[in-house]
Length: 446
Image 1: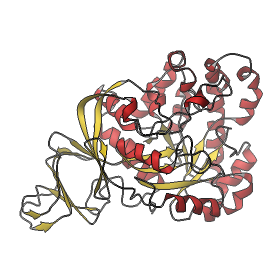
Image 2: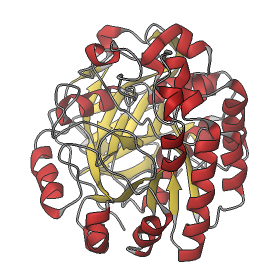
Image 3: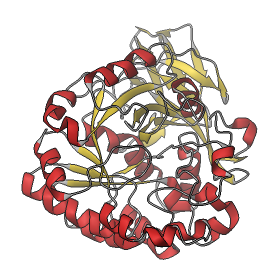
Image 4: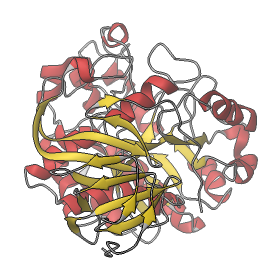
């Protein structure tokens, strides 16, 4: 870090005495912020500034970029909406989210995309981008849709999950991957196998059938198909919420065009225990699997194969989760707990702090070409998460902001906690309380 101690400067905000953590260094350093940007890094003593945050004892991280959330608006605001979901995000140290297209109506047209942008104005507590969903009807328009301001890229569902978006066969997948140039985000499950094994789902058992029906082969077969077609089209793909050790091995051989995301849920929960303890609250797509697959995901993190952590925040109400399987919807909330859960894993020695930063800020920035975010560098947006690495906290219901009012990690004690969140130089959370207004903006991509 540079030493700016002898330079008289004017700042809007100074973060004083924190331990700044980046991919390159972890050291005590002041941060001067001006006009929403990081203006100076170093020892700032000779300055003019009315606003100061004492960060002594805290680590200053780049704001978390959660590249997979479902905020349910429009169409299912009883589960979540843009305001409540983004409020949960900033309480968890998340400063940017990429929202998925399986809303009602789905985000598959220019009109639907612009409707989301209009709804988001003065509603989001964090910055945001929106994915466009691929469907048979919009394949020809995808090259234009992916260029719309605020568009994170194209999302492809290869297997039925939540909503009506589906690209089920190789012919359609080939057409989608040939239509556009940006990295495509993919939910990889084989629709043909899901349909062929429907009798398992409908056999009268409980949620323990979910990972048997949507078995590991369903994911492996789909990812093999995806990689073959992506390679043939020279299209970059990002495989979301990878769940099997075999996929990690496949993706390790395709790193020149394919990247990998894991979720905190798949890295933390394991079958059968989670289904016995949580019931249908543990149901998501792709499913939580057995321990050997979880160990494969951690190997992917250790070996550098996993590129990003996304929460796949997908809330449903208690009433919906209380239905009998398989009527229960798949998905669980996670945007607010992403950073606490991963800090807890870091403190347990499963990954370093710098690897965590790479997965939660630098990684998503590189994957999607996000402009001016993801790094603590002069000239970049002052998106920061101040965390107490040693704080022991309970994930309690009264802390949760999501409308769904639950978490698979409810009552779990974690070590490491987000304390203050800063969005483009403005504190939006201080001392674990929301203090800012909804000043989130659509992000820009290079």
